[in-house]
Length: 466
Image (cartoon, rainbow, N blue to C red; front, side, top):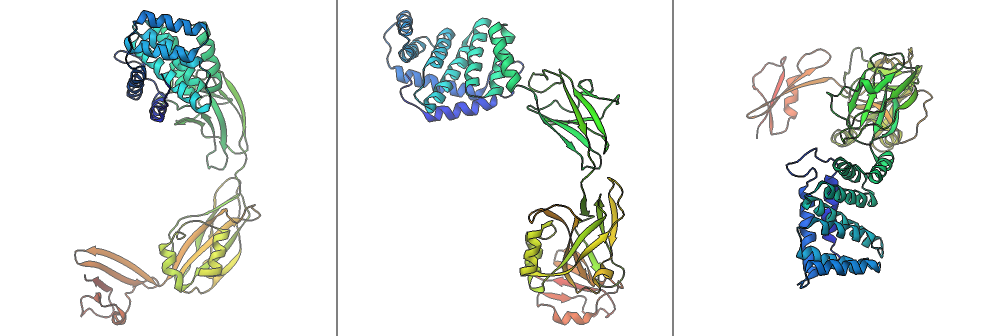
């Protein structure tokens, strides 16, 4: 038995182990029942029967032969004999459990064989559990399954199998194994972080397993010194204490018993001293899309935090590169210093750079208008991008800069899609007057001014005919 290795079985069982991550609380007959493991069990049993061939010995003789092999510590022979035994008596869960234990005692020749033996020991233990009719035998089968999974370093399935085994029968040895495994690999806090740069800071704690849903009240398990009812939120594997303040220190306690979705709670209470630092200097722009008229007052709002000045640069895209830029990857996203250098080298030019002085207010976002017309003077129509960064901020060429793309134009467009094409109305942004109809002569053949006798001082109405 097991003389021929079948890689497919390992893959089936690996998929089945993932399904063990969340065990059902109850089932019609067995607490642990998975279709993936059932499929793996069918394949293993078929392989054992194929390897055993025709068995002429009765079960009692096979048990005696197995005992004789074990007295010589010949576990490979014992495994072969037990394979014949489960072939002639497949419904006997005791035989399957003994087979699983025997496979675990075999010294593997290499890591590959060890992984396959653990796979098969686990499946045999699962078959024993499914066919057991006594609680003690169910518990023993789950204990072997849990140990095999732990040897595979599949901690969550191992813990769940052991937990079910203890539910069926308490065992001091298994309890000790379970508690040790739970301490190292069970539900626990992994790390924490402080979101100091947010407008409303928070401290977040990351756990090894998912937390219950929004309806769960975590307040009995989270204490913040000086606060009777701290604001708490939980999402997936993270729990956060909200509404903290910059520049303040907090004592936060996570109490033992904090629940999870895997039938385990936080084993020990933990205390944390959290300091919320001031926000880092930061710059951003108010929006992505911006159109500036060629004439009149023009300004772009710059939003900054904890900086007295913002370093700004303005780049204009060359006429020949407008289409590639508008349809490309860079348009309307933040750029790095490296990418702005590429604009200067290949696609356009830097038209201005300098400092914008702001009046900072500690940890508060301040809005300052950058006077485009005063700083740059008369701008040519086209596509521009302005980048900003806090003065004296440490960065490298690949850090993203706050970027505001904007278009300088004297034309305002309004488009409507109709059954016969797209109608476009074009007005001046400076005066709101329609553009002159003299431009109709330059339209391509697929576009026409409509109606043809419309007076000159009205909106240009263009229809695209298919």
